[in-house]
Length: 121
Picture 1 (cartoon, rainbow, N blue to C red):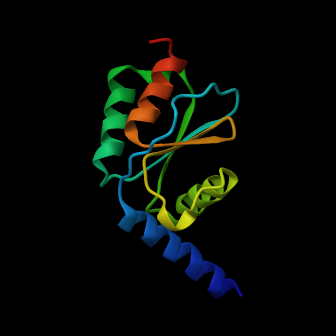
Picture 2: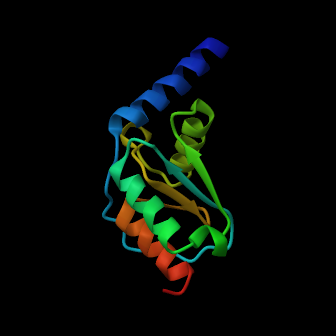
């Protein structure tokens, strides 16, 4: 049983890496009162756009953001769990992916807009 679960986690991580970056048609930023978790890949251009925004605007000095790189199988599994909580298709997930206030945002534009709203920009 453990081997089967481990294979599913590893397959999920591989699928996320292969899926690469995605953009979303989400309706926009949301308010958050809970943890903010940003899932990303070092290979992803959209993730790099988010990271540049966070750095340029010193967002991590203003907000507590947990950042998780998805090549780590534990982080990949955490992403899948958050996607399931949002009723998203976990077979077609990509990054950047933001979990905030029990809701999900996918894609650099929506995530950057979320942070702009949070820091009052």
